[in-house]
Picture 1 (cartoon, helix red, strand yellow):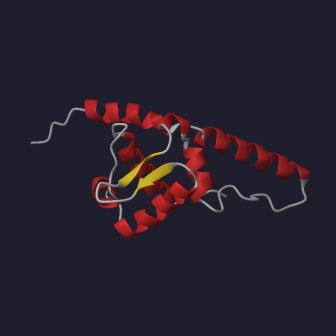
Picture 2 (cartoon, one colour):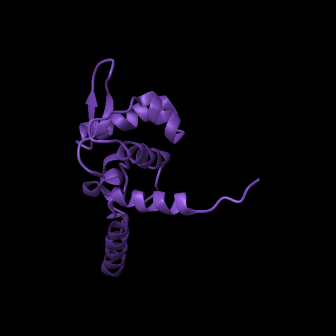
Length: 137
């Protein structure tokens, strides 16, 4: 069955950081790691995989870094899970029982539907977080 690993959680956090950039801006791995509280070595692996799969673009050089290859509205949580979670909803039903096969097939489809949320939705969650009043002294 599916489990969301730290790799996917960190990837979403990194994509959120990159989604806040202006079109011509880039972020260095060090900046993304610091802003999103992600271990830098682990982040390098994640960003490399996302770049290989066409989610990110890397720019080399002193003024280089990473940026989104496409808008976050065109990247879903499902896309990230498929890229990073090798066992994501793999053959979850290991039986010849047709009833159980149908049951698990429906569960799998329902989960994928939930994960089919575009990461541009992070903006609305950012707005909610910003509007939450903080009464700490």
